Amino acid sequence: MLKDITIGQYFPGTSVVHRIDARFKIVITAVFIVMLFSASNYSALCVPLVFFAIAFMASKLSAKLMIKSMKPIVPVIIITSILNIFFIDGVSVIKIWKLNITDNGLYTSGFMIIRLIALICGSSLLTYTTSPITLTDALEQMLKPLAKIKFPAHELAMMMTIALRFIPTLIEETDKIMQAQKARGAELDSGSIPQRAKALVPILIPLFVSSFRRAEELALAMECRCYNGGEGRTKLKTLVSGGKDYAALSLSIFFLSVVFILDLGKVSF
Image (cartoon, rainbow, N blue to C red; front, side, top):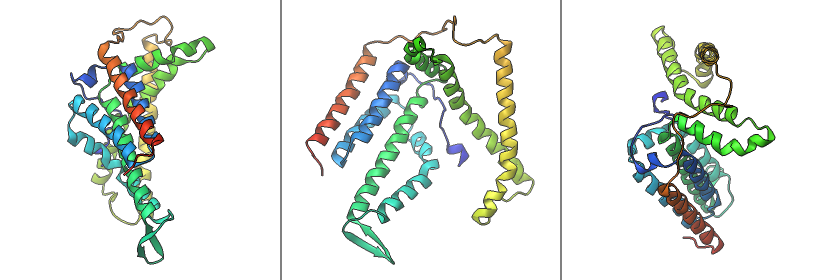
């Protein structure tokens, strides 16, 4: 399961999506999220799904990669669907003991599942096609106007990127610790829920120790290289926007407008 978590990973490529300015990709991702949460019916929800399909095909990423990234959130999807199916009022369709499955419950459950999957996939597409360094530069430049009110734009962007970058590292470290514990006879995949929770203690302690050690090593490495923040620092690669970036942003705004039109017109099926 841990190997299926791909949050924070970057997959190099030369596709159109890879070559879009990172600043535009962040804005487009935000527009995509607005699309998802603005849609109030299935017809409007189809619009961001079509937009994601276009972006995904343009990125030339593997479909297996996107399916693999969804495995860790399967429990969340199941819990969300169960809560919506059994606890939303409506016309009863199926009755299981004292619980009623209503038509509104089924409608809302399917709607929320599709929205959740699209949200995870769309957000993942940003990190899959953008390197952490480029993402840091983009965030810093977008927050730069706030520097006039003494807002630490560079420091915030650096912290966010380091946290994102360390997710795959911590996942790999956790997997190594689990394998080491299993080699010593620990039973992590069997027993009741309390027993499994108790078995995680020997994993969490060395994981925390390793995390603090890595953080200290990173801080020491930055100090040895005379790192003192973003003031006066130059960029090896500067972000340059072009026609394809404005075209992609215009396309996302067009799809957002379609969502608003479908919602205002109450078009549904």
